[in-house]
Image (cartoon, rainbow, N blue to C red; front, side, top):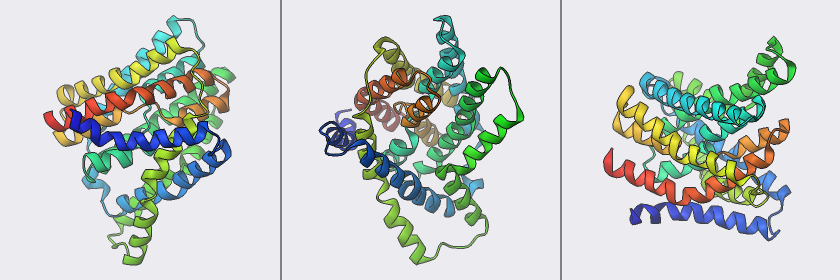
Length: 310
């Protein structure tokens, strides 16, 4: 386990470096925003396009994998909503708490870290997890919040959701990559070198951006934030492990990657949405901060278990 901790430590060290740069003011919020845009729209998109363009979707897609992850995540999501409503919070707040419980930092942390720790072939499973997170739960939060404010569903909600999905660079790059792959055309060497060079910036850039963005997060509403961190770091991977290993058996390696993805801390884009809709941003901010700090230990434990057991 100590060896696994040492393997994961450099990733969190880069996050810590970004956090230090943000806290000291050396890397201000504007600089962090631009670095995040570079990673999101260019480096990470290049990495995802290159992988999708060289791997046919038919070889990656596996129904049991999707069913296991979706069902386990939905169970944790519903449980989190019920617990929040029991405490007397609004439907919108309950939805954001549930989002914290199931949406991990798969894009910025999971893709680069798991590709290096579990092997490049892990990216296929990470992409499936990312697809479920973005398409299902990313759409669900917008639908729930908008419907709760307008008093019901309307066709315009689904138009808004569809536009948001199309504009998401991660979804677009994956989709374009699979479209290229379906044509059975090899990626030209010059383009492949370009994508590989640009994609190589995704790992350090994403990790540094995570840390710098955490520097502006506050740790208010600690009791709720601790609960949400526990749900994300412990309950979510446990539910995913049960679904993938018992209910809908998934190939062990792919199941391990899925469980590792579920063990990742709360994603930063949950805060962006919470801030946009002005729904519990401090609560979400604290959950991101606490879960990321705690994941230094918990992620190493889960990855260690995955590598030695599955």
